[in-house]
Length: 329
Image (cartoon, rainbow, N blue to C red; front, side):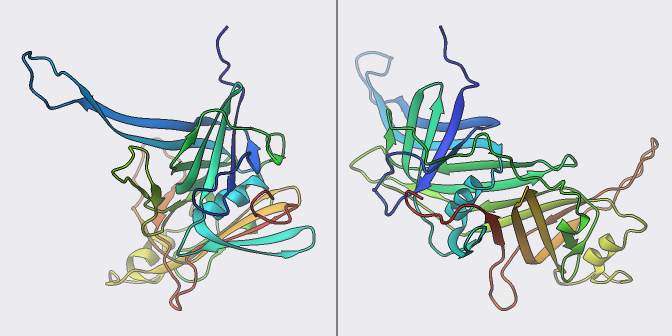
């Protein structure tokens, strides 16, 4: 009898320090696709001559543990994913709890676990290289996460402290139009957003030392953000004109970026996640004609940056029943 691909969960938690792996996941939930564990082994024929035209040996030069998984945004586990990707957190309240998750110059190390029909694997010292939240007109928030780590474990314990597999997941379809805001220039305001995505990238890479083909650590580079929004303009193309000229009635191309903003909120019952970027330079293409007709859509692409005062480019505010995000929480 074979192994069942539908019986699968991903788990994670953050470590107290590099090299101190977790023995079991803090959170776990199902996936919609991808791989919660992989081992990328690099090897090739050794460039050595012999008395034959065939290579006499092979060299194994690298073994990098990684993962690339897709899943829904469960309201408790998503806080840990965001913390590992952004690096900073604080909490207020006494239930419900308000978690403010924001960028930091250093990142925490995590341990990521994967269960595939009872085959358990884990990877320590994980750095989240990329985390993207996206939604379409159905309102369902999907998450894509990629990362790398150091030492794999081939038979860890998979007993999560919190299993979010059966919990409701966050959606944009709250019935409240004001939960989805953006502006081509200035502060975000309620807008006809059809779909969108927000991506966090840490530009991480492995550090491999000569003593082992397994990485010694994963190190992060610059933290970048990308935002994409599909807007259905109701009566005019003033937002396109604003990006191009700086104002809705502008008559000359702006020589500098035009900074707008976005503010989106997803809900699951009384839980919610708000992602806000107050300084986003957008670009947008001009819509094409179509003999078949239909409504016009504008595809905005933005690169959130620090505020003029140097404050965070992206802030996540998560309200849920989770008291804290700590080791073993």
